[in-house]
Length: 85
Image (cartoon, rainbow, N blue to C red; front, side, top):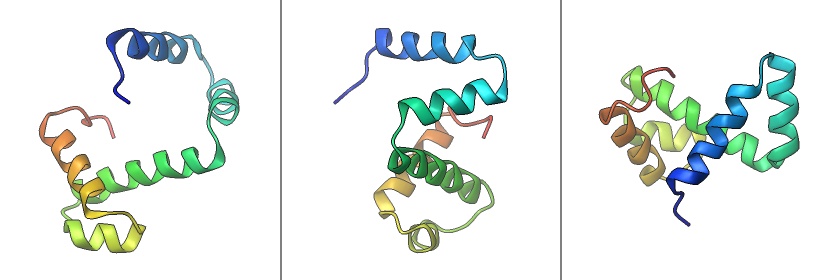
């Protein structure tokens, strides 16, 4: 499933309306399953480890994810999309 501009705009609008950390936490717990929260957190860990110079296969092994998932994170860093992580 591929997202479109309208989907992204909708998400950005909701996130912009959340003014406090408790509001954001409540929203995330309400909209995501526990498994999705873990997966998003793991993706953030991947980005942080890549920025620290940890090798792809080491990240995959430590976080129990596929190398392709790590590579995707690396490609997004190269595109400049994850500068704020």
